Image (cartoon, rainbow, N blue to C red):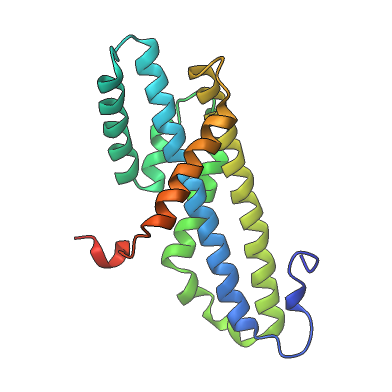
Length: 192
């Protein structure tokens, strides 16, 4: 771990601040995992609808996508895992996703109260950072697993097209809009 985070060694290291930083790294990993599951669910269900002949035109496709996106975005992490639990591409990893959800819930609801005493000990703080780092790597592996399943579905849906080029073009457009007109509204302020 010290190869990855050399700043943890030396004089003047504020381990309490480092614990908080690693909490943030871990929680951002959980957010990325949740987004990956949301995307997988949308693509999986969109593919199912296409294969069932339910989507007759682009308007049907967009309407179904929007409906699936609303459902995915309103689901909790546990709800998302339930939504994808029967999908053959994801089912081998459902046990790990459920375990990671339990850990995420601990960090969201209990971590600061339950682990506060460890912030007063250098050895305990380092041990806490090490444990969070190991968990963060597990979360990243789960995110990669879900993303690979999503990419396989997208490649199937867009067979014969250069998927990587499509994504790169889309990302350039998103970046261009964000640079030209950056949004200054923040969700925790503007949401009702």
